[in-house]
Image 1 (cartoon, rainbow, N blue to C red):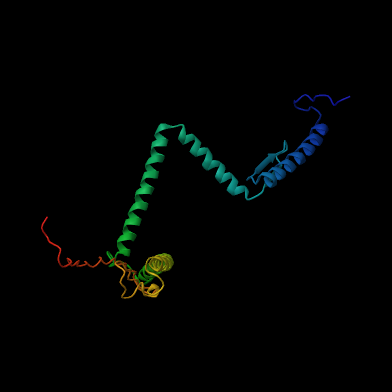
Image 2 (image 1 turned 180 degrees about the horizontal axis):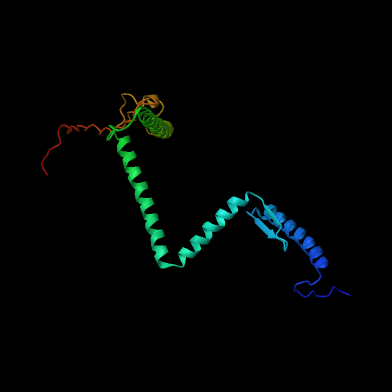
Length: 235
């Protein structure tokens, strides 16, 4: 059979009441320790016996737990009070206003303004801040320049590769031109396609790989046809 439900009421027998208090107190302290360890909670437990004896447990400091409790309790009460809530927001606005003034003053000092009231220690701290800022700016600038140089180097390599490909295509065109000229005029002048030949069309190609490639198409020279003797121009 299961254990019967215990009625929660004051125990009249003083001996039984003391035994129950000791057992449940130890169990409560054990649960508080486990809760603090397992859940990383800040726990504070205070127990007064019927005889006025104090039992307490805190995983941090009982004083800090009580101060935190009082502060949180006051904040909760202020949130439910419109006047207190208004004062709280006014205090928050004043804190933000003061922080803004401090930042503006620090900015003016970094710009070299309003330095009259500063001592040697303040000026030294200001100088250190400027040096740290300049060091960070220089590092960022150097990184940007390195990235730009790397990008330009890659573009230069791509342009050089394209130049080589174009030079190969030009050589292929020259070979095809030589083959066509060979078929048209025979093998006698096949090797003079790009030189001074009788071909009406010729290509002028620079042999330097890194030089610019120029293609020029010359016009065919006009031919003079003499009229045979004895042929009349009349119709």
